[in-house]
Length: 96
Image 1 (cartoon, rainbow, N blue to C red):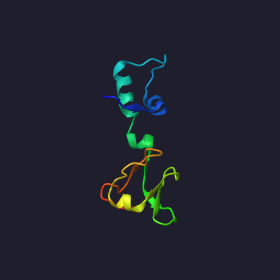
Image 2 (image 1 turned 45 degrees about the horizontal axis):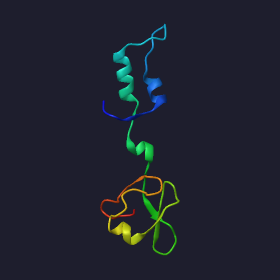
Image 3 (image 1 turned 90 degrees about the horizontal axis):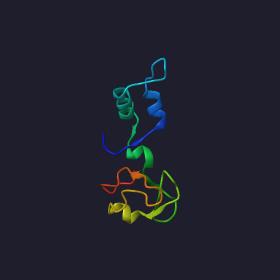
Image 4 (image 1 turned 90 degrees about the vertical axis):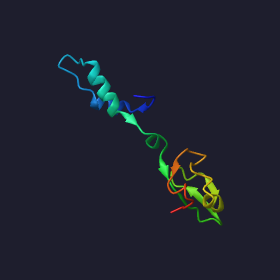
């Protein structure tokens, strides 16, 4: 397992304890594997949505970052600079 974030609740849900509230290292390792969180779960995945302002789109996750639509067409904004969410369709310049 490399350096990943884990969810405490997922780890505790996956951890199997015996009657004495003990477990072995193999079970701990398996529980850790089940508790890994992907980067998208941490920062979110969004899309650039129409901001209903002349030529602007905004992040659908934080709704607090406005970018000119022309920059999206050039595929310059793959992540929201405000909240870090990965933008769907940003690689090819689409906003839908």
